[in-house]
Length: 500
Image (cartoon, rainbow, N blue to C red; front, side, top):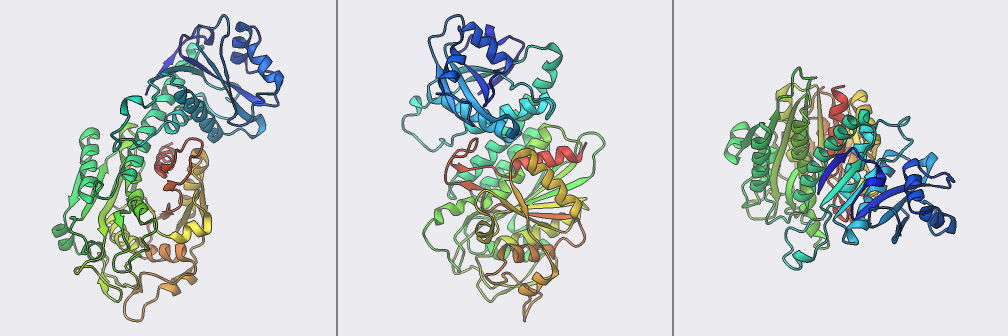
């Protein structure tokens, strides 16, 4: 979809549809909506007066046959109560309107920015939120479908209307930022949506190569022989069971101008997780293609950061492999030696994510970062504790955790902090090694993070467990059913905030 910012009055729009908004319970219409209402002889006022459209959150009303307005249709979308309106509801409202218009077969529509919010947020933010909501809400993963391609409905163009010349630059800047971020989220969603036979470690490396070429980044891909030479025993142990070559991906963005420090992102890249010898139940195992969601978010974030030319040095590390059973696979009871030199007793081969992350975190410290953030679909326990829409957060640095919370509030990607007290280290003590890779059923998310904490030393670090929100079983306002791209918008905002 092409997005254009135009200096044009709403009354002058020629399009398949005009998207307008109304707050629930407000007698007065928004100024631009009121002007269109007068142009149509009070058509909007009448539908509100009838009670058929009250402006409830995401409620819609489609109006036809109106005189005097060049747009063929008017779609009203409810914003909910004014006092409860947020940036995230704005994204959802925009998405709802765009989805209704797409389903009607609309190719081109126009919309103004919702008015009266500049005391709460900047015009740039409002424009960014509109673009994110519309574009993310219209996402579909259809690349593997071969039937009825010509019948699929698709919006081709959206015009964002801004009448004030002094506001145009801010609106254009916000729209461009939104588009760039959406491209990253689309990339992450595509990577997670593809099945394991296509989205292999090799294909993850090729994706990284494409990003590096497009954005001018430095790419290093360690093959298994390189990882062996480095001493990545934890990463290689997980990789042993698969015939697919493992790839340890390192993508570096040097930052624009005077960089505001160095941040390393580490993403879990298990492209398919059967559980290994400790094999998972077959029910829903097909969803374990999602287990590289953290790695997908890291690659996408590097792409967005480079395109936005953020003034920060950023490194993305994605250890990629499958976790499969075979005669070569690692086994419960094995003891492996990680890149850090610490030994790990294997209690279950289905706690493999923390093993590849252990080597990833150790490698991250070579860059002497100001902060390390890892993202991983690490534990089912996190879904039990927080549900499937919330990311679990643990870490060793209060300031970094505050930054993450602030970014989560802006992006609407919910994050909840869990404790990481020293007591939990007791659960991963081993009788024969430095630690064991699982601490039992209780506090599973926390003990997983407790193991990771042993590989970051004193570097400020946050662990984000995205096992729940990496995939949604039902459509949300601007997140269709399927892969969500969770983490990309949060990380990008955190990095933008970091540099300001």
